[in-house]
Length: 226
Image (cartoon, rainbow, N blue to C red; front, side, top):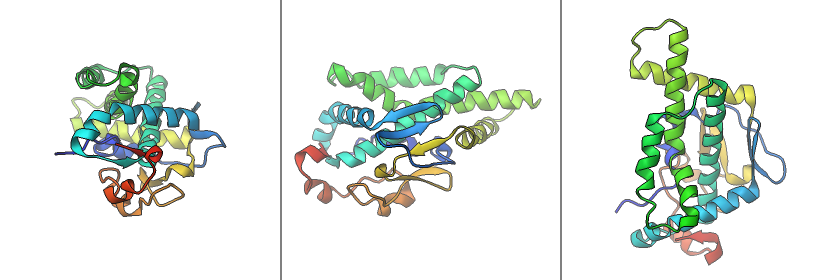
């Protein structure tokens, strides 16, 4: 059975959008994305809620992950979402039908989850769809302004991705190093920093590889999810 993954943001084209410029956030701040701050407390709470939301899926598949891994994915997806919404605001657009369809589809999977964590699950699970939607809308706007007629989907996506990639340099994105995320060739990638588990072995494959289950089993119950 395929294990549920929190960090779907690294599995599509949008993975290449995060992030061209990363610094270190101030104490108590997990990430600063343009004019938005994500606090450590917010990340901890969101990660706990995501763990609760995925509880049944993890139990049925025998999945057990370090909470540090869940927090890392939470920071990545919240950052992606924050950047996407600010880019949308810059271009005067709102999430479109492709994002709304993704939300509707994801909502169908929340019925068995505790009601108080369903919104958190939807917010993180659809972050990649949101960014993809915004990227494609921005790409269409840019090409239209350039007088490009009948562009291909690839051209639209590339134009939007280029604009998305330029946004961090102009507006600033900073991530607290405790989350083990750094920009590697323009991609926000797990690296071996000061997180509670080693991620260097999975850096090349982005976030598609989960930590060793044997490591998770050695952690106290309060430090693992599943």
